[in-house]
Amino acid sequence: MESAYMGTGTEMEKGVNARLSSLIGAMAIADLVKTTLGPKGMDKILQSVDPNDQSISVTNDGATILSKIPLDNAAAKVLVDMSKVQDNEVGDGTTSVAVLCGELLREAEQLLLQQRIHPQTICAGWRLATKEAKAALESCASDDITRDDLLKIASTTLSSKLVNAEKKHFAELCVSAVERLKGSGNLDHIQIIKLPGGSMRDSYLEDGFLLEKAIGVGQPKRLENCKILLGNTSMDTDKIKIYGSRVQVDSLNKVAEIEQAEKMKMKKKVDKILAHGCNVFINRQLIYNYPESLFAQNKVIAIEHADFDGIERLAAVTGGEVVSTFDNPDKVTLGECDVLEEILIGESKILRLGGCKSGAACTVVLRGSSNHLLDEAERSLHDALCILMATLKHPRRIYGGGCTEVAMAHAIDKAAQETPGKQAIAMTSFAKALLQLPMIVADNGGYDAAELVTQLRAAHAAGKNSYGLNMTNGTIGSMDELGVMESFKSKLQVLTSAAEAAEMILRVDDIIKSAPRRREEMM
Image (cartoon, rainbow, N blue to C red; front, side, top):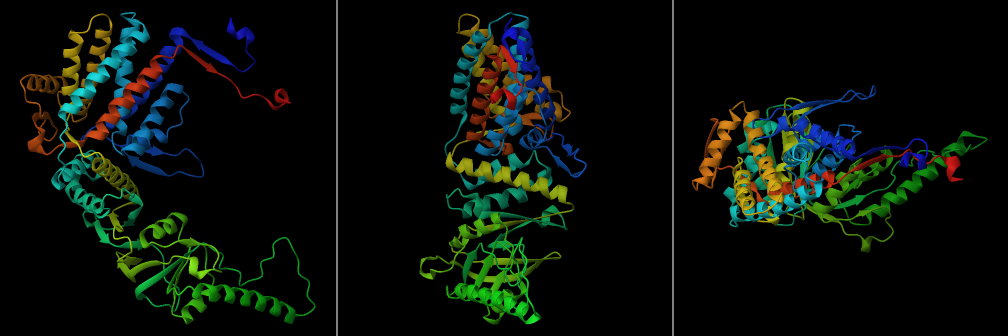
């Protein structure tokens, strides 16, 4: 009926068809990434279909996988956005949040089609279940966080990544780097440099800031007590550059005069820079030969083409300002570091800034056999650093290995027995969806998922509240003894985000696809 009043190019799905379309799209996305869940999860190869870009990446990071897949289903896009938010908020749990949302919608599909329960009733039951799950999660959390706990949390996060074989080494790197921040929470002070060659075990934490740039010709290779001026200015005007114009001269002497005028203009700019009292000049843009030679004559190190991220990070760690004009030296804050030197890592020459004004500055140097491996190692380290920062901001920890999921499901089942009406059925379905997470983790490891999860539920019913999945031996065990810990903030974010997204998708009853208005109609 509504189609009679709609313009051309507008499509509408209603009722059951619209709801099924949303549910199936979201479940398909969850099924896509659920094989990557857990320490025994599999990786995905993402290959670009662009003829000009045939690059590939190998990853098991949920946010990375979902962000690179073009989607047409609206509900599937909700899951992708939710995974991105999880990545931005806490860094880890991007796969878990998508899988939990998908499992909730799978349970909802059964309730809608087989038991004919209204979506609003299901949502009401889920809200009660979420409240009980949060209370159970709160009771499982411990407030005391030590350095050993941080190492265990980092190891648990890295155990599902490509760097699993060296997770203890990388966990130590991450914790040491985060400790240097002294609670500032600014991850910009931690730089990650990827240098192909060697093995992952050769990766290390460098005390200071590393810059993948070269020192200019004829300039000192090592300098102490550095005063650093950070610039974003054009240093390539020592050649005639009058775009869109023609200069007519009647002799070569006139050309020489124009070039000389350009050189004098550049010399004045260099003199203004030197008037700041700096002995290191780092520019975001190019520095041509003539200004480079002027800096060399004055024993000033000039470094060109520091990209925008690099120059901003340098400003943060050296305490300087990025400037574009140099007329007021007294108003410019120079960066400081104890030493600037050129070092050799593998076959690459790197600049090292030691003793930066911000003592938090450090650089993680990643080594590995290929660029694909280094890219995935960088993503893994980013996740671990983010989860450590989230843990320090909200210093609470919980046990991993499916321990909290079983505890939350047990609490919800208990509350459902005391809840009258159909909402109790929805609460039970929420508990089933939570139990699917440890089942998928066990299944990905090639173990008997049903056997392990039933053993785990029996252990929790017997009061063994720290028990979870031991994925090394394919048994259940104490997560306290195994050192499997997770951040409370991450698990809480997974629970709330998945529940809210599933409820939002379930409440949809119409999908309207409309073409953009044509220019003729708008005029």
